[in-house]
Amino acid sequence: MKCRKGSAVLIIRVGDPFCRNCFREYFMHKFRAMLGKNRIIFPGEKVLLAVSGGPASSAMLRQVQEGLSRETAKKLRFIPSVIYVDEGAVRGQSPAQREQSLACMETLLQATGFPYYLVHLEQALELPASILRPGPATPSEPGVSYKEAVEGFIQQQRQKGYGDKDSGTSLPGAGSGESPEGAPAAPRLPAAALTQELLKLFEAVQTMTAKEELLQMLRTHLILQTARTKGYTKVMTGETCTRVAIKLLTNLALGRGAFLAVDTGFKDNRHGDVMVVRPLREYMAKEIAFYNHFFDVPTVIAPPLPTKRRDKPSFRHVVESFLLGLQKDFPSTISTVYRTGEKLSADRAKPSCEAERCLLCLCALDLDGEEELALEPTLIIDEPELERNGCCQDPLAAWAERKSAYIPLLCYGCRLTFKELVRLLVWSGVFSLGTGVPIPTALLLQGPVTTLPPYVRAEAQRRIHR
Amino acid sequence: MAAPVSLQVEFGGGAEFLFDGVKKHQVTLPCQPEPWDIRNLLQWIKQNLLKERPELFMQGESVRPGILVLINEADWELMGELDYKLQDQDTVLFISTLHGG
Image 1 (tube, rainbow over the protein chains, first blue to last red):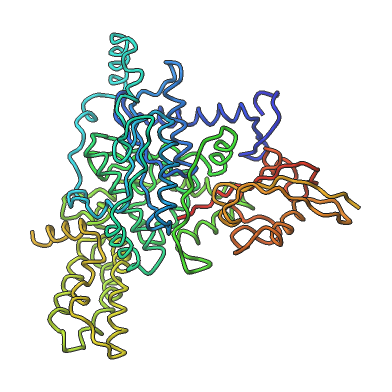
Image 2: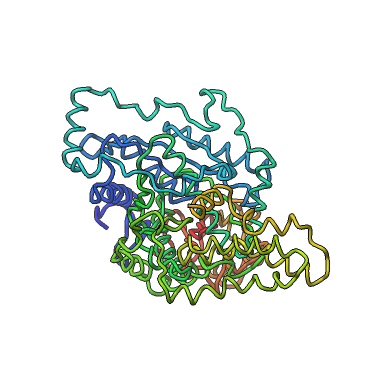
């Protein structure tokens, strides 16, 4: 223990216990050091904090609040706003429970004084196709060095005096948080029809692994859309070291090995104009939990995705139990996996032109030749059985063509996910043919197309027809 | 013969979902021949508080890895973990760091 005064309350590394105050200093220093070391967030830059209400992102929000209220030398100098994506629909919450979670979240966000956006996952169905294209890189970065930018900013601040101090509160909340202070209106839920449509999308996905991937994709795109339309150039997310280690191994298993560095690194620049930054990467989940508990960081924990399987529901769950189980007996497991991930380069994921970019994850297509051959049969295997049925040959052929037309647009990992996204209808089609029940042509025509979000379909069509 | 022990048992970080969403439980452990420790408490919780899916909370005789334990606001790793002898009016908090989805 550093101070030799307080009583030990927490142990992070063996033989190195913390008292409350030392832990608080250590925790806050780590956050500023992470941002300072990487020199990515420029003074005065608009940064969107992606907050789910969970422990890590709530701790991140608190760190930004603490950082902005510090004395000048250590002060954070960017302009934060918060975005919360309500995923209640797919997490099995009733409308009443969703309203309640939203209200809790809104109270929590209002208390920060930062502008905030409340977004519903349903809104992903209304995203524009352009979200799947990278934006033009921000001009500020290559020109000005970080040091010059900081110095310029400090000078500006001196001239202006204290003017900018509460710029954080100058904008009222957007989204459904637009109501004036004092009378917080009940957050409105999206139309029931839209919720149904979203649920259909998720019900069509059979495996939990693919559901998690789909949820993550929709969430990322929604956050990106808000960042783009509201002029944010950075998004901060709250992945901890524990999460990063789990994601590294999960993504390996998902066939996303080529993109580990962008999927888990400190910065993720695949979208071009908006950079995703992960400032909590060096915190263990344990540090976060203790910090939140000791310093009363409010959280709103969302229920997990519903699953029918009792054990091993998804790759991520399996990896999580594996790593945490190992960590229990070998306390450096997680940090070793994490540090191994640090050595990976992001170059492999950088596409040289748009045609080489994966439709779903925007990384460079990682398939050349052999791997493609190995995967292709597993994708096509579902289809011939349907084609044997003569009566609806035409729609089926059109469907198969469409489904296979998507394949070249996707990277290896996304092909596997895509396969899961479109599987249910293939399967139910076979089932119905087997029992001799006539299938309405409309259902068959739906194919993969309706089990994908509209913006993905639109962008795929644009690319296919080019 | 140890006297009955009154405890505040709390759950957080999502662990409360396994206990009907109730975060704070006031419990009284009955008399038993040997003194109450965390090991016994976990068995008692499993039999008396845990309604379903014990595998999400317990593993063997301990908590599942990823669930943190605080005894009177301090890390149980500093207190002897399973062997900590419970005192009357202790607070035991379980925080899940496992990811919901």
